[in-house]
Every structure is written in structure tokens, then in C-alpha cells.
Amino acid sequence: MFEAVAFYLFAFLTISMFYITVTTSQALYALTALAAGMIFISAFFFILGADFLGAVQIIVYTGAVMAIYAFGMMFFDSTRSVREKQGNKYIISGLAILSAVLVVLIFAAPMISTNMTAFYPSIEGAGNTQEVGMVLFTKYLIPFEVAAVMLLVAMIAGIVLAGKKMDLSLTLMNQAEIDEIKKEQDKKVLS
Amino acid sequence: MDTAYLVETVIKVVVILLVFSALAGFGTYFERKILAFMQRRLGPMNVGPYGLLQIAADGIKLFTKEDIIPTGVVATIFKLAPVITAATAFMAAAAIPFLPSFTIFGYTVHPIVADVNIGILYVMGVMAIGLYGPLLGGMASANKFSLISAARAAAVFISYEVVTGLAILAPIMMVGSLSLIDFNEYQAGGIGDWIVWSQPVAFILFWIAAFAETGRTPFHLIANDHEIIDGFGTEYSGMRWGLFFIGEYANMFFISFVIPLVFLGGYGDGSFLGALALLGKMAFFFFFFLWTRAAWPDVRPDQLMWLCWKVLMPIAVINVVITGFVMMF
Image (cartoon, rainbow over the protein chains, first blue to last red):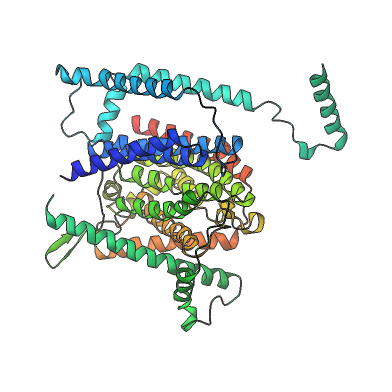
């Protein structure tokens, strides 16, 4: 009974949080609701006994949404609501409902036809964390490594993009050198 | 799920809430007294013997002060932010074993609310959510100093989180489990078995990251009084401000429990002496937080990010790699 109560409670909370995220015009509401919704999703992992994935969900998304907050802080005055360009509302809501129905169909169809079997049945005596590790390093080894390489590429790209002129420090230069840099920048803008 | 289990859990939750809310109050008293002694002052002296009733006076003041919501703030988020800090601090306590299990009236009590098998991961994850309090409070306040504080909260968060995770990874590899009780069992043989002897680097890194996590002095830049007034707390008054405080001090107590449990043997073999030893270690780490505040200056935000990303993170990665090689061969 507890499981059912918890499931319906968190289902309601998650859906209402994401509803707020999509509909509100206030950047701070949207971000907070997004973070809350992501954290509430972890409850489903806990209900299903996948403790490790639940904790990872919390850790990953608190960090990820925190980074979005940092961007939100730079782009918006977070205490005022953002004026959005409204398109045709009927097309937007129609497409949204259609895609939601499609996603549900895609995932529900194999379950209804009941020919789903577990390729890797859970191992007796192994804990939750160990099972995730075993599947990750046998069946999903190549996607795992590819993801690692892509993250490495993204990291190097980020360092290269952010690292331009990192050896310069305005506080350590005298006024003549700063003027020199300014002149060069003006030339680039004018040319 | 039988009724006895349910009643037991509810009692444990209430006891932890009451004990640590009270301890958070005492924490402010200890902090003021210890800082005063280190600076050759007396600290609170007038209310009660040695100023002990100062806590009650502060409590009455906080509870009865008017709760002001300034115009121009995002009211919902503004009201929610302190609750997040306080609530997540206590939620993290659910997976911490505070004492060894003991028998009372023929009934064995395990002083841990939920013995999940991913204890340490859960504790660190939920404690990390606590930084949303300063972030949201700062962003909703419509105050420039609060906004700077919120930006610093985001910077602190993305800096220390990596160090904590990588530092704790090496002990986890040795123990082979994420449960704090398993950590304790691994070190139950006595002082020679403590993980700190085989993982001194991870211990120091985790300890440093704990200061950033709780926002204590070397990394107190989120609410630095002499630069940005009270940071995220500038616009708050009364008990909402008090909730931030309870969250901060409860976090300090809980991280002071986690460090000995992971690195310093925890409660050992579970005897009465072991339980006392755990409380003693906890008291030392809490005292160390206050000691550092009296002895160290604050760092700038860019210095913290430099320290975390360029110094501590590479050391943590090297530590993990060396641990892996040692365990393999």
C-alpha cells in the first residue's frame, strides 16, 4: 500500500513540477520547478529498488540544473518575468499532445505484446551498485567508452574556447599595455 | 511492513530532528564561546550562568520577530529557500548511523533511520541539494549583494562537488560498498584498520571539501560579512533567517559524523566505549570547524575554484588511479 501511495504522490508532484516549468514565464520558477521535478523522479528509482540510480539521479541533476541557474543569472533579471513570443497556441499544444501519445505508444507497445525478456537476469547476491557495474562493463562497454571519449572532447573544446588570452592579467599590466590592447581591439572592430 | 517498524522509524525521525535542532542552537553558543576564548574575550556572559541561556534568548528573539517579505522579491521562492536548506540537512541524516545498535527493554534498536545500501552516496547527494537554499534565496531577493552571493554559491557547488566525489571514491573501492555501516565493519578491528592510514590523501581532500560543503571559514565566501553584507541572508528576518542557521549547523554536525565513520573507524566494534569514541571524534571535527574560523582568513571565489579544479581534483584523480593499481596487483 505504501508503494502505491508513494507512487501516486510522486507522479502527481513530478508532473505538476514539469507543468510549471513549461508554462511559467518567470525564469526562477521554471528553474526551481525543473530541479524539483528532476529530484522527485529519483523517488521512482527508490520505489523500484534501484537505490544506486536514484542517488545518481539526485547528484547528477542537482549539478546540471545548478549550471543552468548560472546561465539564467547571466541572461535574465531573475526577479522579473520574461516576455515570450507566443506562436499559434493550437499548433503548439496539438504537437505536444501528439508527441506525448507517440512516446507512450513506443514504450507501451512491447509491454502489451508481452514478449519482453531480460537479457541479463539479476545476479543472486550481487548488490544494486555491483549489478549496474556488471552490465555497464559487459553489454554496454562500447557506449560507455564512446560517452567517455565524447566527454573528453567536450572538455578539451571547453578549455580551448575559454582559455584564450588566459595568460593575460589586466591587474598586472600597466596602463600603456592596456591601451595597446584596446587599440588593437578597436582596429579589429573598425576593419 | 509491520506496525512496530513504522512506530520505531517515526520515533527515530522525531528524536533526530529534536536532538539536532537543539544541537544547532548549542552550536552557535559553542562557536561564540570558543571564538571568544581564542581571541581573549569572554563571549556571551550575561544571560544565565556563563551565558548558557543566551540560546533561549536568541530562540525567543528569532521566533517572535516579524517575518518581513520585502516588495520586489519573488515571494514563493523567497519563502521556500530557507526551508530547503534546513530540510535537506535533516534528510541527509537518514542514512547516517549515529551510534552502534543497542538493546533497550529487550528490543534491539539500530540508531539509523534507513540502512540503504548506498548510504554515503545518498548523504553526499542530499547535502549537495542544501546549497540550493543560498542560491534560490540569493536570486529571489532582488538585492545585488544577494545576487553576488547566489553566483558564488553556484561557483562553490560546481567546484567542491567533484573533489568530494573523487576523494570518497578511493575508500569506496577498498571497502567495496557504499553503506556507512559496511565502512564501519571494515574498520572494526581497531586503530590499525582505519582507512585513514591507507588513504591519507583522500582523508585530507574530503576534509577540505567538507569546509566548502558546509560553507565554513576558509570557504565562507557565500555569506562573507565584510564583503557582501550577509549574502543570501541580507533580506531575511526572523525564523526564516534562523532556518538557514539551523541548516548550516546541522550540516556541520552531520559531516562531522560522516568523516569519522568513513575514515577514522566510526564506532568500532560497537561497544559502549566505541560509541563514546565516535561522539568524541565528532566533537573534535566540530571543534576544528570553529578553530579554523578563528585561525584562518577567507579565500576569494577565484582562489577557491583554482584550488578545487587545478590542485585538489588532479591529486584526487591520481589517488584513485594509484589505489586502483595497488588493488589490482
